[in-house]
Image 1 (tube, one colour):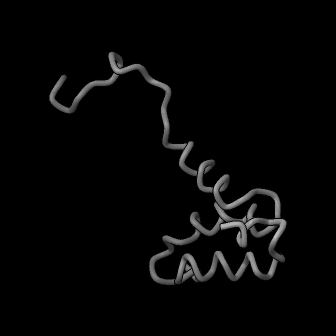
Image 2: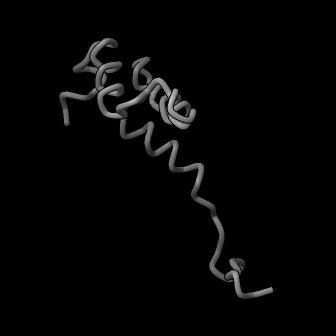
Length: 76
């Protein structure tokens, strides 16, 4: 995995890594790829490693809630 680190790649290589990893990056199929591509832009720009881009994206879906405050669908 060290070959994918920013310090071991050029911008062109990082663009190719992201493009090859995501497949259809034109987002022409249904517009779904736009957000995924944006999440890796800091890696392409050399500002954030791949792992950190993924972690930052996933962090948006983590909520800090205790189990008592969560309700199931059956509780109304």
